[in-house]
Length: 296
Image 1: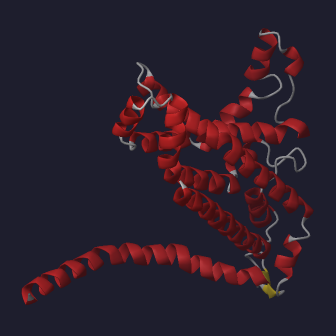
Image 2: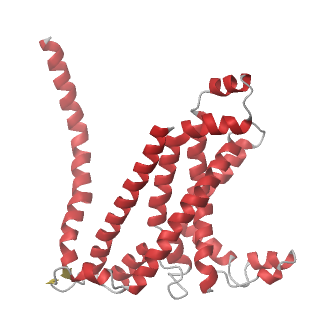
């Protein structure tokens, strides 16, 4: 018994020896900077001169920043589109890719390709395609839809919907493959038993697929919400939040406050409020989907 305890202690010490360096590095480069930077949220600071204590003014200014409120509105719209449109489309695509047909391996790779590509590359390529004299308008003209030709990224009415569409397209394959993994984890025996009982395809989907897929739905919804809340690359590279504030987002507002204006204290305050917003949305989403899992 004593030898077994010694062996367990030795194994524990070896595990700690290998894990501890990584844990220390993680704390040094993640939590310590986070805690120290949070201190400056209460200061007027440009990262050059000495910080000046201003109390809660940075946090008060957040709720009076009209441009930031536009960014919040756009970010919440992106979240709604992600949950109500991207999520169901990803599930439908996952169901299609789960079927047995010849080209499914190629299609799985093709739909996942936008995930592999850097968002910078996607932004630059689509920015060229969507120019007024770009490929997209050229194709519209050739197929007789010239009345739809417009400056997709240069008009207030179309800039943000275009970016939302591109963000949805870019994340579609990733979410679909997560659903595909969830679908393939469902035992085939359940479908065979349902078929023997005369269940239709819709009944199988409703009574077998959806209930057993709820943990996957919860994961995908969480990823979509957090990704939508942090949307930055596409609007920054393609429109820089414009025209005006039509494609402005919270992440872009934080970036501009820090690196364009040089008000690091205000940017940190926005980041902290943004973090709380993400936590609230995530907790609500996990509670709702978790409750649905229990009900099913």
